[in-house]
Length: 208
Length: 208
DNA sequence: GTCTATAATCCGATAGAC
DNA sequence: GTCTATCGGATTATAGAC
Image (tube, rainbow over the protein chains, first blue to last red):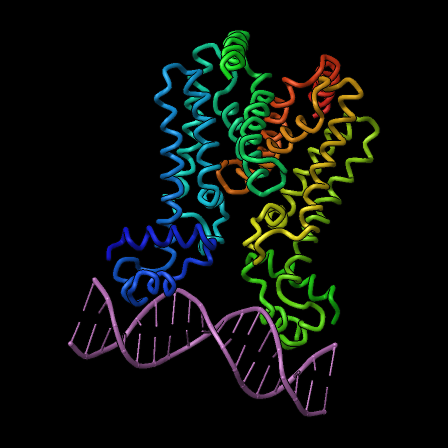
């Protein structure tokens, strides 16, 4: 048994019953060892929980960086928003964990590694927006301000959906997400963006 | 000692140490009684926690309904967004609790009373948007869709701020909130809204 | 309504043998 | 690295006396 076996099952327990369900004793029992054995791999419970949180950020990062395969700033921008949504819908509990308050993890303030991971998500959106501004697709506003607005909207909408406030299935929510996103972008886009979107919507309407 | 004494101190404990800090034993000790006495007022812990959650929604509602004293749809719209922000900044832990996942409260799914309270918040924003559309301040879009977009943005931005991701003090964040909000509204406003806003901004610039 | 006493679990963590 | 044994604590909740 190694550190990775523990982490894998800790994630499993978290997905099933939330953070409070991840206990050293339960973990040991399920892995067929006794609790003290775990302390050879993790100094304490917090340390182990932080690895679970890191796994959440790692998964999120995977979905985001997929957007870098897009061939234009416009495509990478759209794919970033979609990748973020995909992550949230595929791994709602990990998504929730990314934004969990510090005391939920048993710590007063977040360790630097978590703060840095979260900042990385913000920076990724930032880069996508800057690209679009430079390409003349978005108005020449402050990229950081614009990306914060978009990030806030995406996160808020996903939170509200995952909370169960919207009575719609996942497929409908996907449409709502993009339509609402467009309402936000609309006031910040350039005529060029609008023209490209129109062509895209027409192509989609013809094929779908 | 009555149910209200218990609730008041339960809120106090929650504000100090989060939900897990609200235990029947600790509650009893602080109130100068023994734990079994509490069970004469609350059937179990969950029931008591739900009262704390209700208190969070009650406080939020107070801040929102204050917006109804505005004399025009435009004013009530702005005051609703500001009241929501005020609530979040004055009572961040209660704000957090409003959106806490069900398992945090020790329940599998939210009881109807919580769901209804949350729906009430959505409906309030809905009404503010509809008023503005009817008054010609916002474009004639679907009021429910528009208010969801605005709610998502406000909630997301506040969440990100309260999470500690934005390195700015409260006063700066207030500006960010309104400026970001304006970027969202911009694409949905009418020329009339824009004209009124311009006058308002000028007046503010002259006085501030 | 409040008490004492107690049942029945769960937890994190450590000492020391092997 | 894993075990046994254990410390020292927490929790919800109930039975039954007053």
